[in-house]
Amino acid sequence: MTETPGNTHATRTVIELRKKILAGELAGGTRLLEVPLSEELEISRTPLRDAMSRLVEEGLLERGKSGGFTVRKFTFDDVIDAIELRGVLEGAAARLAAERGVSPAALEEIGATVAKLDDCFGADPDSMDFDRYSELNAQFHHQLARLCGSDMIAREVERAARLPFASPSAFLPDKADITAFRRSLYQAQAQHKALVRAIAAREGSRAEALAREHARIARHNLDYLMNEDRSLIEQVPSLALVMG
Image 1 (cartoon, rainbow, N blue to C red):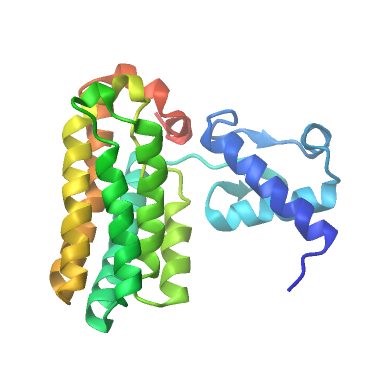
Image 2 (spheres, rainbow, N blue to C red):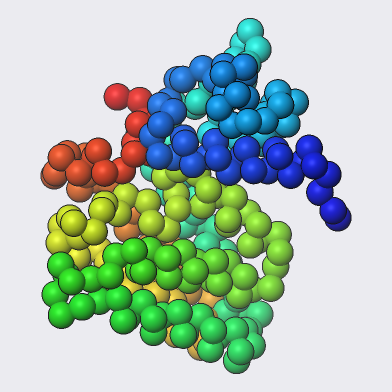
């Protein structure tokens, strides 16, 4: 289906607004004013409203009681629930992939991604190619969601991953501080490999358990940020959405 110009503008605006929110430029509780925002984004107010309605569906915005839109605030429990939700959905995707079977071509493709992730690890944690790791990590999870052959499962996994705290790279700070997170990255890579092996071996329960445990790495990293080294919080801009 071909997008109309209005839909195209709304889609572009969804992307721009999502970036601003996740980058911390629009903090939780910020009321979005249509006129200045439409001027800033160079878009008319109708597609702007459409874009904001879509972000309500994603959970990033909420409608005000008297109209308009506000950047949503999240509680700490919301963050934990978002992480758990992604784990449940990815677990279901992994289990179905193992039970239904995956083509050799698809297994080879995700296996190649895992091999490329291996190459991101240097001689020591400080020499790791963090940007490349983040890119390939997202690619791995994109492929994982599709292994079971269900468009519905893949769509819901990716919808959950769009929540600001549930993406596969949530709570990974800038590469300058990668040493503090080296254990989680090495653990995550080991789980990537184990997941692919379990799916290839048609071990559904094991694949599901691994995927759910894998998602909890984000929880462990969040705990580190909040309880061990709060100086890193500013490097995770989306935490600006979390209520104090």
